[in-house]
Length: 360
Ligand code: GGG
Image (tube, rainbow, N blue to C red; front, top):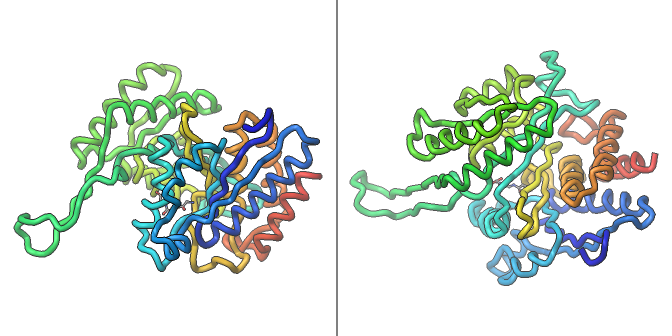
């Protein structure tokens, strides 16, 4: 912070609809700050990093980009990826680089119903959907370990190995994070997602740590569920879940499923947290850059605005975050919806409705 209540934020819209939703989120946050009578404000700096930047410079981010970012209170991110750059280059060159360099080991992805939004589950008369997916964000299947062109494996053709890294320290900190979070919720339950029947090393360590940590939280209900069974449970028994803790890949997949079940990927918010606060945390919608609808005013800004609310909670402003959540509910409840959730409103229409809802 530059003073008591001015937060320095690095905005990285990056690619595709990331640009539209970051602009929307900034407008809503600035309106909120303007309405606070100077109690807090934002000092924004926008960075041009992403796939266009890569095509001009051969880099997804400035050489000293991480040094620059380290000076900020938080990072507000859009989405990464564009068809002209291979996805593994854009993802590793920017989003994963930031997450891993800043040890943002806890990725928090809340999933819940919003008024006015129909979902496959609501059609089935499900009244409750209120989960938080806690994603291990620093290792697991996205540790970047492996290689290509490995000779001598005897099958002819190219061989590639992609390894997953599970450390006791990494597993323990994400488990404790999930249990501590469960203690703040009305349903005190942690569901651990595993695949230890087939993955007999890393996932068995994951399970062992889960059961050991659970012993320290006797007040929290627990279950350990195979990822395949958990996918079915998301659909068939959503009311039986509260906090879901999963490895990097499993949580990446399940949180997309969860947000689709809530109505749309465009609604889903996320926080990439460095809980020790040694580095800035990063807030971004769960969705990607959606090249098919980019630049057409069709993007749903709710996921980005929900991520801004998570950022306010991180800054210790829960009342301001609650104002954003209320504005989101008022807007969706009034049927001001983008195309992905069955409406005809544009990104700008929804953004304006959110700002109006803050004032009302
Ligand atoms: N705003 C999220 C985003 O840009 N996602 C792009 C993506 O491919 N992410 C993979 C991941 O979440 O690890």
